[in-house]
Image (tube, rainbow, N blue to C red):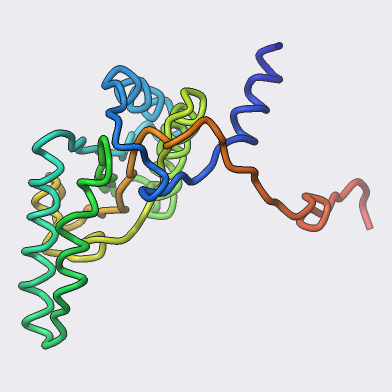
Length: 196
């Protein structure tokens, strides 16, 4: 297989593999390290490299779960809408994973904010493609405490920075990789080939 065919294959086989599809087996740290290294090669305008990651594993997963649950409880009780089931989900969701990577954006005013979000998204895509190439499951979620301003400092982010969610990582239960679905690209592209 040529390198171009291999690139095509890994892009077209990237999937969201959810925690209910994880086996409970640990993913090798070397694969997670390779995911992060490849994230670092994402495009970035003016080389701001805005991505910041915090990797949770082992007891760190419980620390993340406890933090999320406690912060959710504080916020929800203030707003008068605390839900015990949601609290338990916040607490236990990370424990379904081998690793969880918190995805942060360190803001730099030299470029527009949207460019920094795009750069971080490209970094996450690099991680996702690397995981898929190794047949490691993962998915990006903006659940949990992603949009809680009070959460930022826990992940080493300042007030002007953004938490953009979490990459949940786990070994799939079996070798059957899900099939993908896409509508034809021809429905989404217009080619302009001449002057009117």
